[in-house]
Image (cartoon, rainbow, N blue to C red):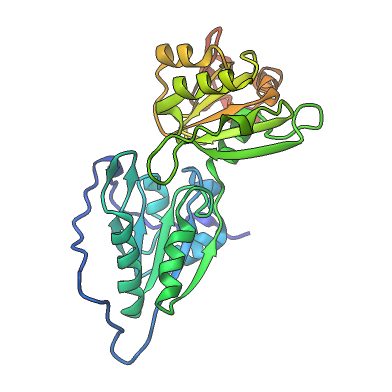
Length: 310
């Protein structure tokens, strides 16, 4: 078996939350490299932040990148896995705070690929699930540039798996929906009538900032206020936190708990399985704190030495 640690490049730590983009986006048309060689763009899903959840294919591409354009949700550990010689450019976005507009990111992809570079567009989660990956590829192929898309573990899967909340279960949910809480224009996604089926699990991305409005809208549309509901913050990271409640109570609980972003919202009967699994879940025990309705579980108090069990 290959020792994966041999692939990990050692770079100085970077505080991504304070990164500034110092790239000057050119208004002039991009030019093709001398000799006519056109590079490639590799759209890579970095997953939910845990470097152990990165795919081997993503790692291989990252290690031969000339240019890496990375988002704010890409963890430092994963960024450190990129080629030491690669130029790393921060183009991250958070709500109402964009280091570079989407058009500028598109232009950088095209500019560097036409200059003959191997360009890695490194995105948190999966690029094709609320990651604007399709929009960026539309611009890439418009300029005749070949691309590769490498999936990543989306936050919903990573968060639910580690928390012990299966997104589907034959006794509880026969379908799962991934829904963004905000539309392209920034307007709220108020299509509440589409989420009333009690046999479906609904996962809301980017909805923590409007949790109260969202839950009120769902109840007004007819969803039972006793529907189990979870907020999961910092999916799959050591700092992951979990808040469990109901559709009617979760907004008030969050006002007290104040779980930080980024966070996911999970609605549906599958949330009740968390309590059944919690004491036996190695993915939760020994890592981080889980905020519950009734108590705060400090996993270090439950099992001081997780390694002794494995």
